[in-house]
Length: 200
Image (cartoon, rainbow, N blue to C red; front, side):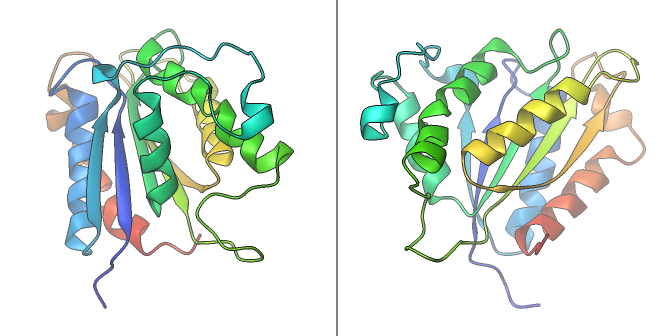
């Protein structure tokens, strides 16, 4: 197979460094890198990102009026061919730091739907941009990931990428517990391999 030159953005959505979420995302990115992709990493909990103000300022210019670290996230989202978000589940959704970033993509939603401006593409062409979600939760609830997966579908739509799939793992609480899972690390690496050259 011809090596890829795609750019992959890994969004680390857990505030716990080196935990289960980080482990899985690194395996996923390792798979991407083995396909020749250039991988960029952003740890969301290390950023200064305020919540969406609901002010409507982005409707006028297509740009968020809030000046903080989200500006660099916008740039990364727009230049990436592939975006993978990994996050733990807190009260049946992503942590507050990650949700703040998702909410702030309202500016990109506005640009796409209200202003009819599409990210990273010339007029009349749609680039092959795709997104993937990795989730980890501590409990065994049957619907533990349902709300989060729906959130991720809307997030990826807002940033103008196709939702390409997800991997989720419940009953994982202790730091590093995911390493004892029989298939999780392999699953994520293989998903990363496939994600780079995915055609949907």
